[in-house]
Length: 195
Image (cartoon, rainbow, N blue to C red; front, top):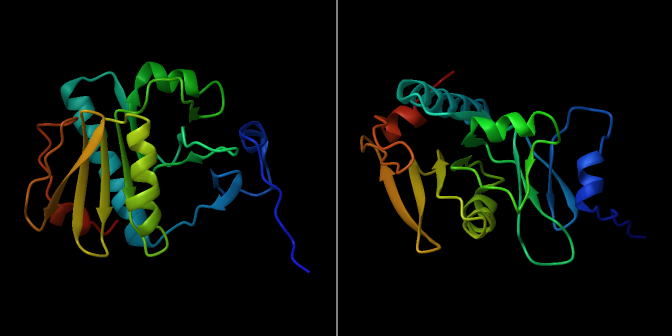
């Protein structure tokens, strides 16, 4: 006998609580557990968030960098909703202040994040490179980073004429960002972080 997990609406997803601190993304109405990832995965996320936050403070931008705290509802067509939780999100501070007073999910009709980052793990590589790329592109997120420690590469997708154009960076190459054009960061620095 097969058991099927009931699908959730977006409203049900926002209220869902299984009694522990497990985080879930909603994908086509199904709860998908977000694994913690390796120590390297978490170290990279923390390092990138800190680099962005330092740059935001240096340039006195009215933005903030948050790691795994903000959901992004996908405009994906279909009967069931999808909501992702990127590893790192850059949004304006006023938008963050609004999210602090409700579920921290950016709705389809709200301004998209300025930049999102996903750090690839063995279990997420297909989703990060394919599904999330399509969803973030459809949301018009101007810049999407895929940091891939499995193949020692950072790919930045930049929104140009409503389509993502990829640029790949490896080794000692400086990562070029439209959101943070003065950022001095190489792939080696990102991938060699230990804690």
